[in-house]
Length: 169
Image 1 (cartoon, rainbow, N blue to C red):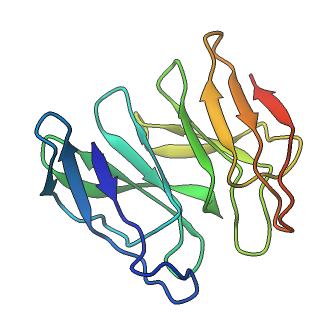
Image 2: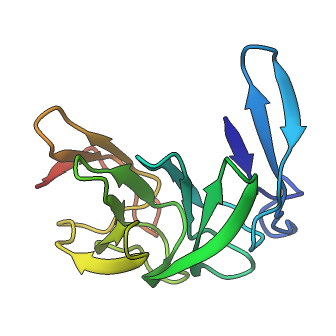
Image 3: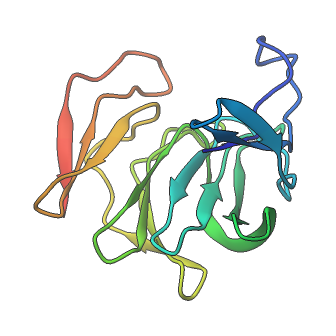
């Protein structure tokens, strides 16, 4: 299990982002340091790709980030990859049946996004795709057996939580 980034203080306004990463072995209940991320970040997302690498996107490092990177477990190192179209934190990543990754919603500094992007690991390119009906951050996204993604809950920048859901097809 990869544990990467975070912040050094519970108070988000006093926190500095961290670049550190560790691997947790559940069989031995031990942690082992691995290579640091290329960018320090917190409130980012990560998804295990079909090729065994881990895609890390967005987050904060003082401002919302557009940068993405890949962790290669065979080398224990991170490398920069494509750049998202929008800086995002508190968004979701969902690996789709074809191996691409849906990156949806999130917070971009002064607004919550309804937009979404698809990451293609074969080309390292993020491309815009159909957005959500409403902007959401801190939501969930779950790949369903029929290949659709259920996006649920979350909140707007004003703070009220949503009790709604929508499907990405």
